Amino acid sequence: THRISNSSNFMDENRSPIIPYVYIKHTGKVRDANPVRVVSSCNLDIYTFPFDVQNCTFTFNSYIHLSDIRIILGKKVEDILKRSISVLSTEGEWELMDIKSRRFNLSIVLRRRATLYVVNLLIPSCFLITVDLFSFLLPPQNADRSSFKMSLIFGYSVFLLIVNDLLPVTGSTIPLINVFFAICLALMVASLLETILITNLLVGSSNFHPVPGWVRVFVLRFMGTLVWLPQKSREDKIILNPVARVCPLVTVERQVQTGEPGKMWAEADDPALMELRNLGNELQSIRLQVAQHVDGNQISQDWMQVGYILDRLLFGIYCIFITFSFIVILSVWSNYLK
Image (cartoon, rainbow, N blue to C red; front, side):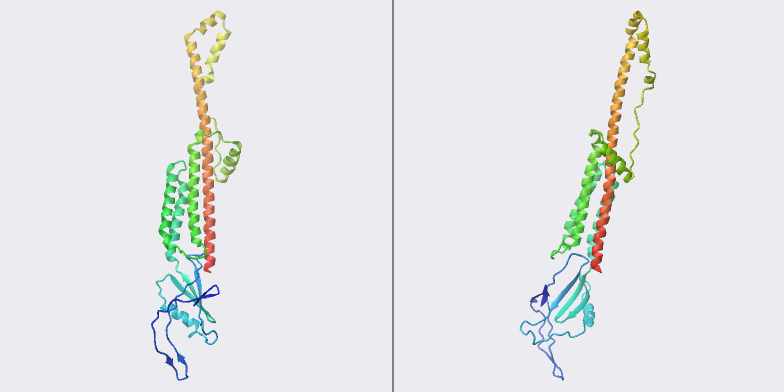
């Protein structure tokens, strides 16, 4: 029988060959060497899968004779362990680590061979999350970055469906490797949402209002310095017309206003003077349009700078969270392996 949580379970039907012989020694001892094939179950703790170590305890007793029969081991535990290791199949999933014996109890310590799961589960996941990490190097204002991340998420989802048969389906707890897969998928989805946000901010920046003061102070100055993207100096890029600097129109108007009355009306009707006035008005209108265009470009550049700073900041947070999560998971696995 196999005891689980202080309760005994019947073993499966004995299918070992029947040997109708007993061995009688000259001392009067009778030895029955009838083999028994024990098929039972073991409550597995799969929290640290695939680096789990299982301890299965078997209790051998009689349900009819409680105290009349004494059951002892035929050999020492060390000899039983060496013999079991030599005859145990080496191509199986489990590796025999130790055998412990107490009165009526026999504990078998098994360790899972994790090489198959590391190669087929953990390494591909690490590769995909690394590719997603380096995808932050793509230009955020380009749509190729978001489509690339969507392809990664789709590929990782297909990968999880394929390897689902390798994961354990029994157990009272959720394996830590499932948490690892969930973290990887959540990080990929979070990076895609971040890319959508930054792309929308960079592409639609020309339609936004001017950057608020608190955003300019907190993001452009403080966070920009934190992520090594300082705010660019704002320079007036409106180039005045060198002819306008001399102001010939004002000179002509002054001459007209200070001249003699009759001469003033004569010059006022001069076609050349009217043409100069119209030209001055058109130049002033062009200058105002250029100023508005430069102001719009400055607003767009400010929002684009905000987007670049947030993108680099979220990239740093992404790297820190990946490193912290992997360190925690690896430390838990290493503690259980000791």
